[in-house]
Length: 304
Ligand SMILES: NC(=O)c1ccc[n+]([C@@H]2O[C@H](COP(=O)([O-])OP(=O)(O)OC[C@H]3O[C@@H](n4cnc5c(N)ncnc54)[C@H](O)[C@@H]3O)[C@@H](O)[C@H]2O)c1
Image 1 (cartoon, rainbow, N blue to C red):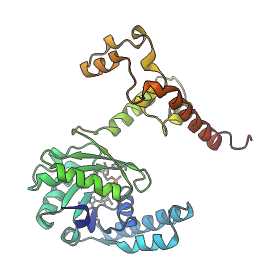
Image 2 (cartoon, rainbow, N blue to C red; image 1 turned 90 degrees about the horizontal axis):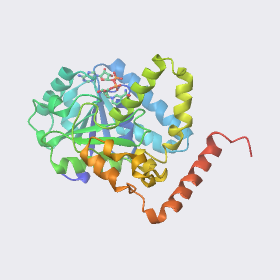
Image 3 (tube, protein in one colour; image 1 turned 180 degrees about the vertical axis):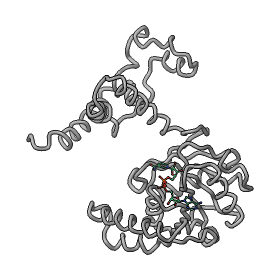
Image 4 (cartoon, rainbow, N blue to C red; image 1 turned 180 degrees about the horizontal axis):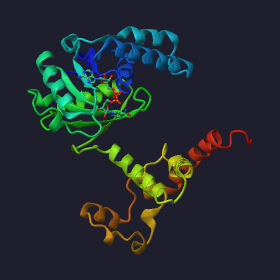
């Protein structure tokens, strides 16, 4: 199957995440069908879609005509068979409960045409468990969005235990065609990659709050105004580079104390991860220009 063969996308579950995931596909031309358990829930899903598109228009992302066309590409149903029969790619966005997700994928496996790819938006479960009972192991992937999914660009993508390279790449292509940024993962693990990193921050922040280190307000403000301020431009690896940590003397970097062999080897090199040492100063200047632009936009807007 190629990207051009994906015409209709199914989204099972029209809740907090499902409505926004549906918007992504519909906005970029895919006929999109959402299923949920009741007409009542689906009425709420439709209202959320309308509200989100209004904000897109208000924010100048799209025009009113595009909003209308997007809405017209989305249909809803309580009949899973109707969704399954039409969908070339289905995203599961239902409750985070293993037996429910397993039952859904078994049903979809019976109802969908053989070419249909199955994706799960699970946060903590793994595909080996969710899709254990289904036949199409080569067509099972994770697409993990971040709330609000119609706005946040990055989406984690991982293969199920038997998923083909073709399924993986096609899923990444599909997401890119909907202007999402696929983040390719090589392994499955509960919480996958980014939720684990996010959870580490949450755990440390809440623990320190419980120990009375600072108020919740100051922890929040501290994160937003320090490393959070930098984050639109740099993650931990680029930070290692631009902060010049790779240039520190070896005893200060202390790579020998690192247990993981692969990481120790990398740190022993005393080289940046990404940057060319020859253009280090330029990279730092580029970073500072970007930070100054954001400092003005976010904090100093009334000063000059
Ligand atoms: N909320 C988040 O920030 C977030 C972020 C990333 C991933 N996720 C994951 O996305 C999934 C959905 O989360 P959510 O926050 O949208 O939940 P939600 O409760 O808001 O929505 C789930 C929807 O699925 C429907 N549903 C439940 N069982 C169903 C079934 N068998 N068939 C059809 N519809 C069914 C429910 O009626 C509900 O509308 C979960 O796996 C969650 O872990 C959530």
